[in-house]
Image (cartoon, rainbow, N blue to C red):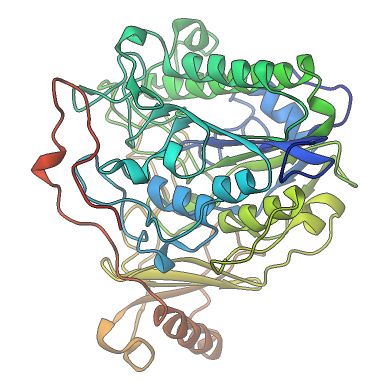
Length: 502
């Protein structure tokens, strides 16, 4: 169903503008509701694929601004660190892989996060859902990083009904585990909490709610009523995955209705973003598989191809000067922090930010504040990608999951095969990193990355490699220590307080 009404709502999946009278707040600060979907691919929303049932999301998107060149990082932990810090992951050591529950580290406590800045500006701050920014020390946890309340899970992947990770409970209300909710679908728990936060919110204070959804991340589990909306003849994993998207759509609809019922909708901004591309590989019949899809974009989650990094997104709000269209302007997940700080009247002083204030682009359709974007620089794989204007350069080991994967019955074996890239020496630009393939694409004219221009435009290749070399000098080494046995669960529950934060 669509949600069309008092046109005063901006979903960033997440921002609600409300008169704020408390200390540190100023009048007309928006309430902010930021909704981050988990592993939702480009081809996993109904405005790109009519086989997906997501009517609420599509209505909100079409009444707002659909962001067709929205980019995130290729994996969960790096995207969340970029969102919350406004920094590229390679600037904070989060560029390589994801955090596991036994790792003695987290998102460095030496950066001030978005909720901390918003709380200083008078906001009531709440988090619901997936954290995935470290759990080994209390200092890394959400309630110590700027959130007044937290209900959700610390780790990267949760059983949707029994709320366990590797057979140990990871479901929390603040620092209290929630074994009594065993058997309740996690998305339902998160939606109930989001509704409660909105219902109980004192409208004299601006609200920031970060709804970090679990769906449609594996394992593939969903209430049967959603699965029954899809044909039984579908690939089994794809059917369940699609139903998980519809369950997420229902959740968003309930959150929007709660904003309306509470009288907050007219002063709200809602933003909806996926954290990375869909994971297309499916272990058929296992229910632990993946069945996302990014077609016609190239690649998979955990790749620097467009399919791994270009994700569904929209902004919805009555505060927009212009709405009801599709934007092809460039925006990156680091941009949300300075954009939301501007809307909140909060200070951006202190830590350097890699993001740009994109409110003029989002609100009035002006050109993007960006002309350059770093997809990532990972010294361990190694690989890197850079965009300048229309041109995208990929360097390094980008061979994994580098094809195009249509939605077909036989996943993942059916794919368009990508031609092998010519190897090009880049020693002169990247020194000891050696020889690796280089690709160059005009991703405005060729968003599906089918025409490699590297041999036709050698000067562009060299200039972009030199820029990558310059940027790589700013790299903080990847912080991914070996798992620590001190992090093992105690009495069937994951724990904190067994490492030193830094």
